[in-house]
Image 1 (tube, rainbow, N blue to C red):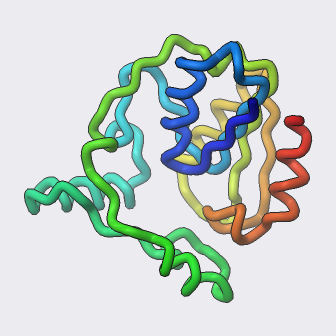
Image 2: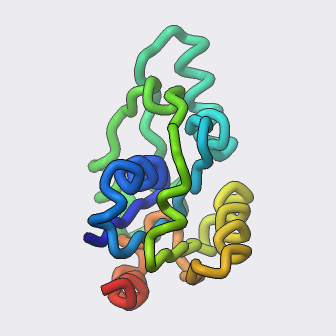
Image 3: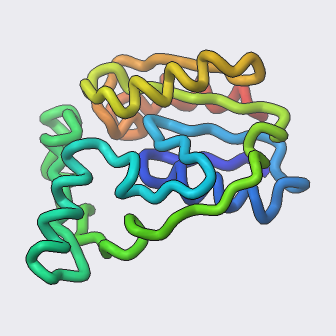
Length: 163
């Protein structure tokens, strides 16, 4: 099985690998969070995501506003389409701490893809972390955060290396 996680789904992929490690041959984190044991999304969120969480919590809401395609530097041609797909997000998953044993590191093929057209120190940090690990491959694609929208051909080229 090949797992692909974009953005918040870095948490999801990390959790799945913990449960199904033996079935996972490859994993790709695309402009995604690389959590460590005991962290929540709130702990390591980008400043924009953390602000959305904190605003919802201070207002007593259980959901937070959806971000905009523009905030992710999605190309102008596709922004309206992406905005139409975005929905409010529950706050609770951002608060839950993940339990990890390091199973991701035991996956044979691991890739981190950084969308360089989306200035973000949080994802720059995770790219640097992946680069420091000798068993990881790293790639940079000139794209907004939604690489699969902005540069689908280039992303596919990278992901095909995992098969």
